[in-house]
Image (cartoon, rainbow over all chains, first blue to last red; front, side, top):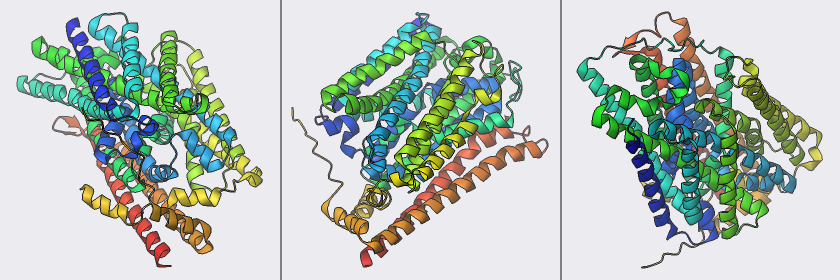
Length: 498
Length: 116
C-alpha cells in the first residue's frame, strides 16, 4: 500500500480530533465539566459518543479478521458486544444513573458504605482499563506497520500522544464531541469502501475464489463450550466496563439513560453489519489474507486488494482513518474514566490531579504494549470482558438488585473472580507463545463460564455469612437507585425532546 | 469572544427531594419502593430470558434443520444472514419492549406514591 496514504489518514484524524477537542475546551470550566460534562449531554450526542467509545480496535479490525479466520463462529463476537448493551439496559442503566455517583468506586462506596470496597473497586477498574488499552495500542502498531512500513512503536506512541493532548486539554466535555464524531467517522470508513467493493465485484462479475463456509486456514470450528463461555464473558463483561459506565452519568436522569442505551443499540447494530461483510467478502474473494498474522489487517487491506489503483488508495485512506478513530476514541474514553478514578482516590479530585492522572493512565499501558506481543485483537479484548464479568459485574448486579450484599461479600467475590480469571489468563499466556486457543485447554482459553458463577457464588455466600455488615444506609440508597426522579418534569422533557 | 460558563447541574430540583425523602422515611413508602424494585427486576429477568432463548434457538435451528445453513439468499448463506444481521432486530425489539414496560412500572409507582 502507498505509505503516504496511511500517514495522511493518521495525520488527518489526529488533527480533527485535536480541533474538536479544543473546541470543547471553551465550554469546559468547572471540575464537574471535566469529569462528566455536568450531566447535560443530549441522548443523541451521548449515544453517538458511547458508540464511538465502545467500538474499539477489536470491533473495527478484530471482528472482520476473526470472521475471515473462523467464519460464523466469529459472529458471536459482534452479537455479544451488542447484546451486552441490552443487559446493561435491563439491569444497570437507570439505577446506575440514579445512584448519582461519578465513577464505579463511587457507586460501590455509596451502596455498601465502605472505604475498603472503594479501594478494591478502584484497583480492579485500573487493571481493567490498562488491560483494555493495550490491545488498542497493538492495533495502532499493526496498522502503522501494514499501511506505512514505519516501525510499529510509532503507531502506539502517536495514539498515546494524541489522547493525552485531548484529554488533558478538555476533559469529558470535549471527549463527548470527539467521540460522537468518531462514531460517525468509523461507520463511514467501513460502509463506503465495502459498498464500493460490492458494487465493483458485482459489476465485473468477479467469481468467488472460495466458499463462504470454508475456513481458509483449516482452523477447527469452535465447540459449544467456547461459544457459550465467550457469550457469558461478553454479555456480563459489558456491564462492568469502566469507560462505558462513566458515560451514564452524563445523562440528565434515569429515563434518558434508558433512551440513550436504546439509541446505542441501534448504532451498534448498524455498525456491526459492516465488519461482518468485510469478513464474508474476504473469505470469498481474498482468502489469502488469512495467512500469517495479517488477518487482523483484513479491513485495511481489502480495498487495495479488490479495487486497487487511485480509487483503492482513497478507500484505504478512509479505512485507515477509521481505524485510528477507533484506537483514539476507545483509548481516550478509558483514559478519562481511569483518570477520574485515580485522581479522586489518590490525587484529591482537582482538575490538575485529573490531568496528571490522565498522563499516568495513558503511559503505563504503553509500557505493557511494548513488552507484550499482540494476540488476535478480538480475542484479547474478549479476555478483558471475561475479567470484568468476573469482578465488577457481580458487585454491580448484586449491589443494584440484592439487599443482602455486604462489603465483605463484595470484596471477597471481586478478589475471587479476579484471581481465578486473571490466573487463567496468565496461565494461558504462559503455556506457549503460539497459544491462541489451539494448544490450550478450552477452560483456560475461555474462563468466563466458570469464573463468573464462582465470583457470584462467593459474593452471595460471604454476604450471607456477614449479615451484620449490611449497611444502615441501605433503605435510603435502594430508594434512590430505583425510584424515578423528577416525577412529572421528566415526562414533559421526554416529549419536548422529540 | 464570549465565554459561556456551564453552571452546576439542576437535575436534583427541590420537589424531587421531597417525594424521594418521603419514600425513604415512611413505611408505606417503602412498601411501594420494594414492589417497584420487584416488578422492575421481574421485567428485566423476563426480557433477558426471552432474548437468550431466541439467541439459543438460532444456532439450534441452523444445526438441526439440514441444508438451512447452506441455503443462499442473494449469494449469501442463510446462516450468515441469520447470525450476522437477523439477531440485531431481536435485540432492538427486546430493548424497546423493556423500556416501555419499565416506564409504565415507574408511572404506576408514581401514581401510588403521590396519591397517598
